[in-house]
Length: 135
Image (cartoon, rainbow, N blue to C red; front, side):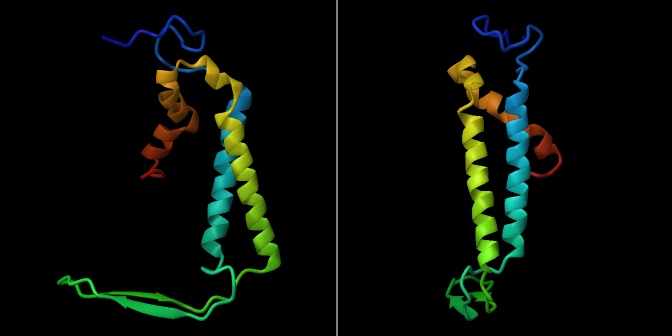
């Protein structure tokens, strides 16, 4: 038997438990996804160390039939002042946008027990999972 919508809230449709997200909340969530993608892409392109550092390697004894684990990092030229600033700006923007999404007044209209499901639906989690973008 299908789940009946909660009659105490106007955010649920009668046909299902689909939520009507405000346009502003959807726009904020889309900005979060875009900024996070930029932030992650920049992080993948930057050297592994913020400061210029010599390369190094380490061997860890694992007692495994596969052998010991060897970890190696090449020398890092470090990040430029511009890269540090740009990465910090993206991080600040990502935090501010995330805070705007999770503190949006609309969430108070959703019953507490349904907020997690609503958050998943607002983030596009199911669509990203089908597309192979989520773990």
